Amino acid sequence: MRTVHIKGAEIPVIGMGTYTIKGSGAAELIAEALEMGYTYLDSAQMYGNEGDISKGIKLAGAEREDVFVLTKVHPENTYPDKFLASVEESLRNLELDYVDLLLIHWPNPKVPIQHAIAELMKAQEKGYSKFIGVSNFNISMIQAALDMGAEIVTNQVEYHCFLNQDKLKSFLQQHGISLTAYSPLGQGMVIGNPVLKEIGDKYSKTEAQVALRWLIEQDQVLAIPRSSSKERLASNLEVFDFWLSEEDKQAIDQLRFTNRRLVDWQYSPDWD
Image 1 (tube, rainbow, N blue to C red):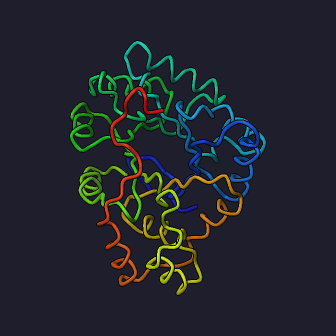
Image 2: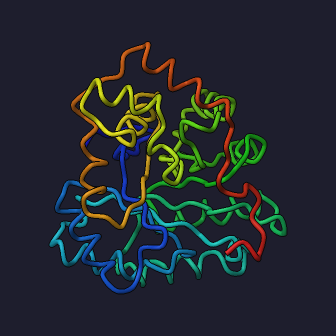
Image 3: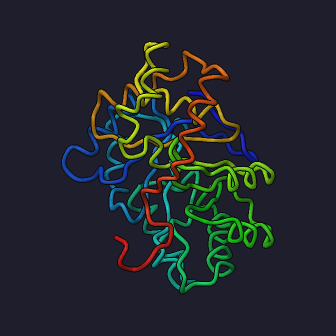
């Protein structure tokens, strides 16, 4: 698996998104993904599947150092009196001494950014996570974290070929921060798109594979596609044997200007 190096972190360029993957069959699916070649598992307190992640790693017989594990702190746990205890609970659920990357899942409008980031930094200092980052943060929020000296390695946001994230991506690149794309396939919108299909036909690739390739050819961009289908999980890894031409990339770039956002930017207590 190709990796991106950010501030000492070595992050696989494609990970397994696990939103909605929990309960019956989840651990087995996670184990199969690891056996296919996935080495990066993206979880969250909000997903309620940290225990399934643990079971999946055990089922696969994977060594701890061979799996990059990420989890995210629920917005309601970003209060200073809840943050560290919630991370400790996540580690118990995951049956790990540490995670590789810990994120704040969404900024909570009731908790000042500086308070939440201070707790995130404490979690790293305590060894609960090797690296720290954020999710769904805008530029001013990330700047506030950087002003505190936080070593942010990624900002996980919605990003796909139908959404222009140039401004945010440029800011992140300037500060040596990766952009992790969730919903990288536009929640299925890439399927049947004529531009992606025409390009895919040239390389004997699917629209989804072209869309993923477009993302990971960008500097410091990672992707975490989610699928409960074993076939699609395998297909999502088959993107390392071709390169898009400049003409192809320019054609896909034009799709961004539809600016189709699929996930609400602002978290509220009713979001989930």
